[in-house]
Length: 172
Image: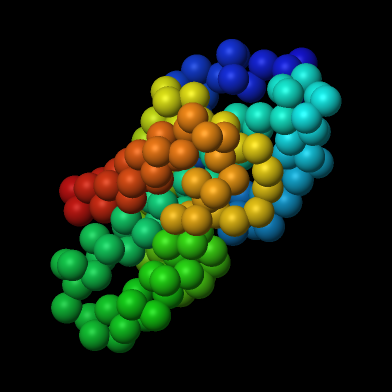
């Protein structure tokens, strides 16, 4: 049932929750449990005709973390923290969030929470724009390469919404 109705049954709030919970799952290594589901959803002869609507929702989660780190960078006077953020941001933009998570947001805790909330806004936008992936692989800024042709721009809108959400919520 879950695999047949991702697009139709996950409302915008569901996208918010799924994306928001992705960072805690990543911090525990549990995000890998979705791999079989992504394989099922990416099967062209499967129930979703090879378009995975779950993957983009989860992929934008790292965007909230990038936004939270940028907010801390812009407001912090701590040179060591700023250096750490600068060195981990390139990986974060590719949504390899582990360096940012384990060296910046998770140790400071509040930015981790604000990053999760910011990510939720990106996930909600992904659902709203009906973004779907046709493959697994690259993520972050490079992810439009694996999105179906009608949703490449929508993915970028969702990713930048997560960046902005993480940044603004962390600033407040």
